[in-house]
Image 1 (cartoon, one colour):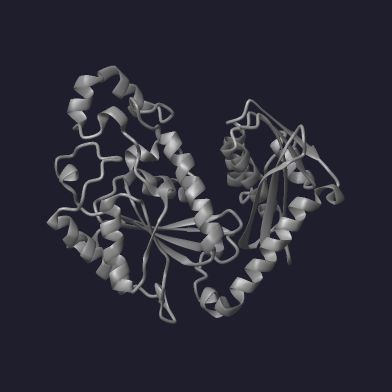
Image 2: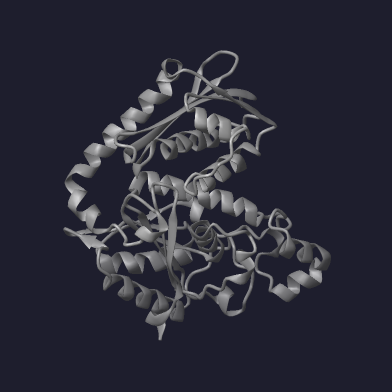
Length: 369
């Protein structure tokens, strides 16, 4: 573990807005040794969006390395001044990115921001340009297909091609029938749950844009068996394959796993009341909802970096799906307690390269009727 690190970050756009990418490098503050590099193509975006992307990626990498003190060096005066609190964040597309970067920065004991000339930021700048070059090459044969997927939401101010997430909750399990806390417990679908998964698969199989030139959309699922079974039914319908991402796993309910709400309340009445009113509190031996939100945000960013501008099917659980919808709505944590999601339901959210988002469907179960 390295306690003190330097984060050098940059982003660029060829057109502003135009094809954009970011780069970040984490170095040991004492020796200058490169500890981590990050780069990604973000689709059509502005310079400022790409620069924030580099900062966020760099801070996330520093957190993964266990750093406690971070010195950030960037040639973006705007990002440095906004993160230092000297300039206000006025543009709506910048506000969620600034908030995300501040949420990451809060993990460290100290973060200091410094503006440097572009010539001194050549490492991160080079990574950003590599990302833009790679993205341009990857996009070339898919340009027509991606253009068809631009959603008509111009009145929101969103620009660029969105990444559309089709969010499917898994089908019924024995734990869900009995309304027990079901987090990391690996339980399979019931027969009825398999029927629900088949119905969801049929629904997605009939949707346009999920199979293009014989290639199915990416299908990514939580590693637990109930989501894997649901995702496999969808993959069979689309002719695709299932990938797994650990960031989509359900909340770890710790000692409450397998208990009903009443059983958990009888065991820890005061603690559960606090847990229900404060998303920073973790279940005994488990995970907080704030922790889940950070984990799912990281997973979302990784998937958008890999599949930006495409339609993706994500098969997950209640809390991760609520987290993604919360990001799309730019809502507070109270949404977790006010939004209901049925088994095998479908929700849709789109995330744009400029930081905007659009929630287009929530908890649709018409395919189950």
